[in-house]
Image 1 (cartoon, helix red, strand yellow):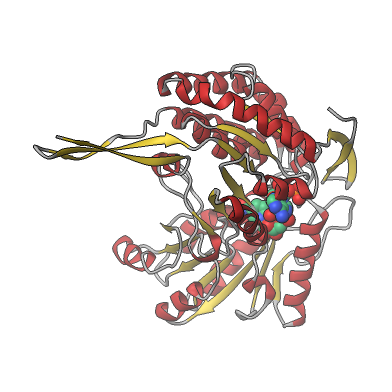
Image 2 (image 1 turned 30 degrees about the vertical axis):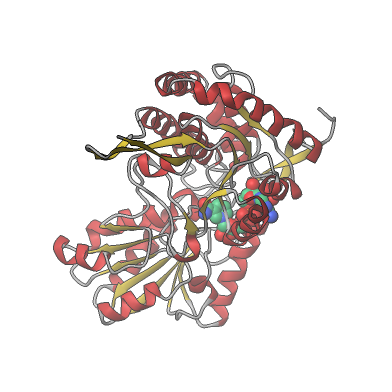
Length: 456
Ligand code: NDP
């Protein structure tokens, strides 16, 4: 290991609080070689035993959950006792749920001529590249199905939030054989080098659409398998019959959870003109009352933006809305303190051309858009190059379900948004991604199909 390191910033202060070992491209080579060497034995390990390793990892994480949550909160910014602890709890739940999965063997034909079986086999070495919004949970989403399927893994966390992922891997390696799970942290070119590396068979990536394109291009010469979970600009449509006092709390939570830094958060809220003002005022009151602050203060409900670039983007989107005549019912300008703090912001009276509507904000700023006719609202919701999630809110479940199916997105919710299940496929259509995660659908992405045809 070389002695180089890079700084990790505390988003609540904007100051460096730790240094992280910096991996070189040469270390990537030796790490991939270690993962390749470990692969045949891990692939030949019976799946029930691999699943027991996942359960043992969950047990090991459980014993470290408080210290892991503290590290996560410090580097990511999210409130310790709610969001950070909740992320670790979700990571545990997902690890255990993934351990129960078993890929099927399909029998397509079994007669006097032939027997045709379809088997699922691991791919080899999987590279996982993760973002900074849920560094522990998204690492688990990548690592656990890859390992259960019989692959070995090299993970590279975001250079903004490397520490909790490195710690997670350290904990998992107490129970895994050497070389099965490996982690490298580094800035800049490391992710790009992984997507090009000939010793890697698949890349699973969660992050921005631009980086997804770059990974796809890097992976093309070696024809790697890809799962890309990219940005979203999710629309929620609130119908005229939705009970405002009942839906407001949930809409608020699903727009502002993790300070809006969630790929499938509500990012555009289309509200029928009859209830628009009432819902806007309700959400604005909640936003004004919300406690934004450092993750380690007990009263904090919402932390800072995770990094300066994201903070600057949110400031720019608010400014653009202001110059276009947007009306701010809550928030709108950065807090006057150190760190990357932006208050929860509700803006109305912007049209669909404003940057805050057209672009993924990935921060605590929600535009409300008035509509008259639901067909018009659906057309506006679908007029996006993204297609991760979408939702319809109504008292009439039958009508809402019908309308939800017309949303062009990978997951359509009714009276909910961004709630994920370890068994249901999650992924984007259009430029929100390729492939899905979770359940047998997601597990299949870490395996190749092999048809076995036995002639009789
Ligand atoms: P990026 O997509 O740039 O980063 C995500 C991960 O990809 C990091 O580990 C990063 O490493 C790595 N990476 C960066 N460039 C490359 C490359 N060329 N090849 C391979 N890997 C690479 O996200 P940002 O942090 O820049 O966030 C920008 C935007 O992405 C946000 O505004 C948001 O819209 C979106 N985003 C979406 C997320 C989601 O969950 N869908 C999560 C995070 C961001 P390194 O840190 O070393 O650069």
